[in-house]
Image 1 (cartoon, rainbow, N blue to C red):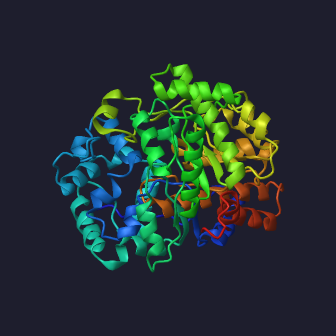
Image 2: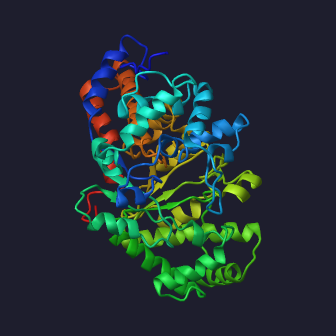
Image 3: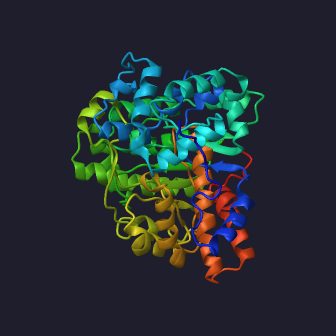
Length: 475
């Protein structure tokens, strides 16, 4: 069997001049606490602290990066035991699924997923042989045995990974019960939530009208009126703040914003509430709600995150059978300069407002995003995201944004994952890439090494804490 080895200089520059500098920079931050201010792990794991059931359900089933690759090669989601939209799942043997996965592991050569999972196998479980069909059963048994121990329960792993803050993401319709259990426990893990209002601001979201009614019930407001609807958001945001939230998150198809007067906004809401509405009206409503969310953030201090530019659920067949987040969200072109202008005209110079922009359209880095963040005080650039949170994606981000926006208009690294054990692996990759980028600036005499040391600490720890306002009492 082939040995599984992680080279100590992986992802560091090949240059003999830059590599020693990169090593020193990386070593300075390798053991710093992990700040994970935006992600999608399940808070139930940390509330109940039960053992993970088996290697397949832990490592493969939550990770659409992994199973979408297998689907691209003709493996069905049912064959992998991926849960369906109705809550059922195909009856499959987790060990058989693991064998199937191992038989396709060669598909991940030179991909970020391979880098992350090899790290998890080696560093978390002590696996010493590469995953392939011959080693699959042995690795499965070794992981399964460890998962039964106290050291591999969710809270113990959280502490072992050095996670200081981890934010999950919930909708306004969530009662945050699991977060309450975590807060009331004797465990000190920093698990907080974030306010993701998509189900009640997107008229094209499934169940939108029922969601509005439930929002009103939870908030004790009349969501059949524009004023009551906005009041319901304020109440739910306050509820989330009390549960530790410091941010909101908005996964809109575009970055479009609008600034309608009150009469226009009220009339639009009435059309949306009585529905159905046209695609243009739905887009205008989402655009207006980004501006309304910015207005509310000025009042309550929650940091806005805007994650636009994904064609969600591109496969109607997969969406109908398996629901959201099954690997068929595809990047689209995104216009930031024109689309954000209404919001920026209203709030762009407000010193108390903070908006973090993400993109799946890398063509906008140097043309739009870096110039915008390099001018408007409300804007910061989120890191390379989703399809681009890869070594090359991170390098492209730094190369295309640094000269215009600098480092201090960015917010460090977000792992943005459902795969819990990949969090430290992803942060390790980000620290190595930043070490390499900064080392190259040092050997090119654009930075002194002491400046690079200060920068890599900021990028790793200080900037994400500051950008997400994590130094509050709620955290």
